[in-house]
Image (cartoon, rainbow, N blue to C red; front, side, top):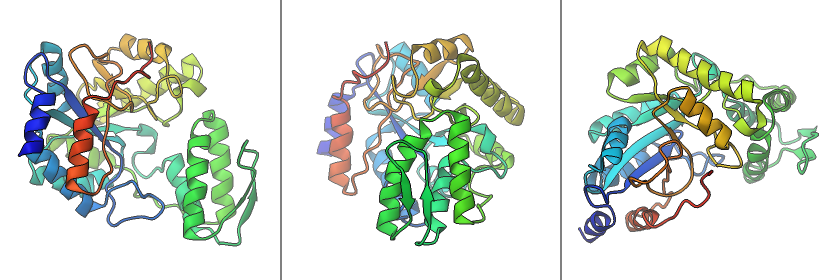
Length: 322
C-alpha cells in the first residue's frame, strides 16, 4: 500500500499526471540463457499482476488522448510490445486477458506469416552452431568469430546484435546470411505473428501499430528508404486489419542514434497521431507526442521493480531529439 500511495503521489490524476509506458518484445515459454532479459510466461504473469495492482492501465490510444487533455487517472500506464513475435499471441495475450489489461503491438511487417527477423536469424545461428565453428567477418570491432560455450555465445551476441543492427539493410542482411550459411541450420518459421494471429489480437481488444517493414536503423536509410519502410508497414497492417493504423514505434528507438528530427517530421507528415521511442522516462502533458518515452524494469523482486517504476517518474529524458 505504501508503494501504491507513493506511485499515486508521483503520478496524480489530471493535468499533473504522468503516463508510464512499458515496453516488451517476447514472452518466452521458459527462460533462455541467450535472451536473459526476456521474461518467460511465469515471470510475465508476475509482472502483470504487480502492474494491475499498482497502475491504472489504459489502451495506448486512450492514454495518449487523456494525456493531451490533462485527464489521466492516477498511476496511469500503458503496455507495448515491439516487433511482432507470435509468442505475443500465444503467451502474452492470455496473461493480459487474465488481468483485464490492454497492450499495443508494434509490428515489423516484412516478417509476418513465416518470416524471421534478422536478429533472430543471428541468435539461432549462434545458438545452434557447432562449437568448432570459426567465421571471418568484416565487421569492425568483431573480426574473427569463434562459437564456444553457451556463456560465450551469449557474450558474442551481446557484441554482434548492437553492431549489426546499425548497418544499412543490405549489409546487415548479407552478414546475417553468412552466419546462417556457416552454421548450416534450418531456421524456424513460426517465430513471428501470422496475419490471422494479428487479427485475433485486434479482435481481443489489443491495439496494433506500425514498426517499419524490415526493422532498419532509420539513420542508416536514405530519406526515401525510410519513408517507404514506414508507409509500407502501415499499408500492410491496414490491409490486414481493414482499419486505420495511426501509432508508430521507431525501430531501436534511441534518438540521435537510431532516428532524428527528419524521421519525426516524416512520421508527422504521414499522419500518425503519436510515435514512441525507447528513452527511459514517463510522459507528461508537455511531452513530445512523437517521442513518447518507455521503460520496463527487469528487477525480479517485487519491491525493487516497484521502486524502479517509482524512480522512472523522476527520470528526465534529456536525450530526446530536438
